[in-house]
Image (cartoon, rainbow, N blue to C red; front, side, top):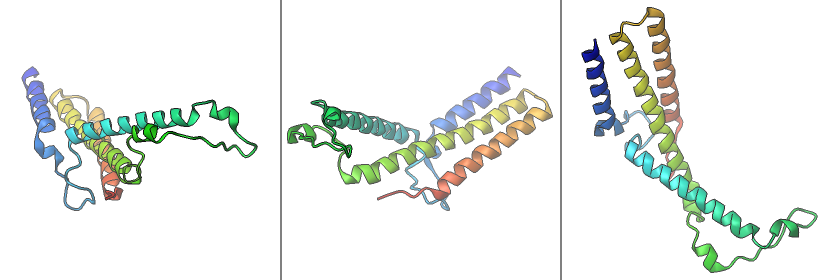
Length: 161
């Protein structure tokens, strides 16, 4: 019994670590480079950098007690040094309208794909453990739900470029 569980684990680990994980069926409207855990990690780093840039930009806007200078309409004039602006990345239109969308979509697609794959492995592991038919039915429903969620996202995601 333990040997079967170990073999299922090794197969699952190998599959997740393999390059074939990044391949998407041709009918999906998504770039094949997506669904790659390494790319998803890089894009998650980009999202984190963009959020840090947003915080830095907000700090620039709020320096010198900007909130206290609001007029009756809720607006205030803020003078920002060009050198301070140049230090902040991700303020350009392309990053904000293409990059943010693509990075988030890549990470979401990869996580949904991984969730679907893990549900399949959980099911196979449960079969090896000879769990009850009721539990197998529940796991099969979880697989179908994860697959549908993944396929719905992939079918509706459009890569911006």
